[in-house]
Length: 411
Image 1 (cartoon, rainbow, N blue to C red):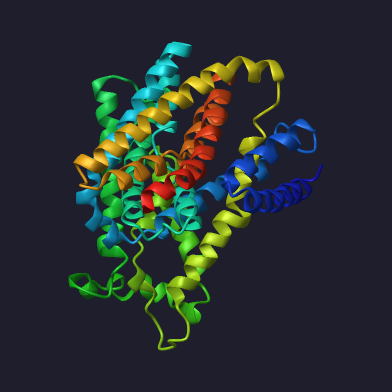
Image 2: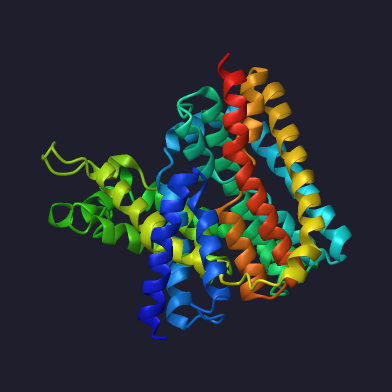
């Protein structure tokens, strides 16, 4: 089959998955994975994707992570940290430890256990917020707590992915020197991103405006080229370039793309005198459409194509998947709820809603699974299927528990 024909099949499956997600009110990611697995097992899609599709899928996850960072309001995020730090800390530590020790018990491999813990750490922000919005709860205090905590979880998880994945893959030693090297590279990378966001992008204001050449070129001027006609191109270029910078430091490009989105400020889009066009809102809509409707989903469909159906294998890992799901469900809800109550001063209904809202696992989990299983072959087939089934169960539980708790939450 021609590469373009494969892409056409994948895009058709994305269309069907989006339709099914709307009908079932489940996250489209689950349906992307389902159709990927279905089509590869029906031999409509090949088990080994051509390089064009794999590279296209890689671009998809870069844009997805950029979009997730881009949609965050950095100022609100920083203001909410004080109340949500405990939810983020304990709500991430508990699932990491649960997944790590259960995986270590099942397979006896510390690298597999480490990556299973990483995959199960970060909360799916988009899944939870879509579920809350569908129930009319997106503006509640619980939603704010979930959002900030989930973003903190994602940033911490991205940092741990950057530091621990090279160790797990054998690209860096477990020695003190090797660990310090990875930590040092991570620190340098995040310092560079901070410099880009704090001094390079806002050029044209402050002291830096007096520097020849550089002081004349700020991100606002670049985005304003041609009455904003090149805004999206500029943003995608930034996502890819910062992703490549992360790659040069030995990290996944998605790490850089997320940070690139986070440091882009709304005021950079305040250009021209035409008040009829909200360039920031327009850019957000287009980036989200690219990330979640036609390029990003290719990543999840191709990841689903890794699920070659074998009934015996599915039945063999089902007990492990159910045990991991039960452990993560209890650990996540208990840790996040208790932290919300005692470190964030939320009431009990809101605290439990936060606990339920942090159950989802999506983008970052699949990034880690893709790195560990597809790229580096660290995960065994059994571990891969266990994680995929567990993720499926956790994501299904988000809209179900939120809908169930809504009555008690609002009473």
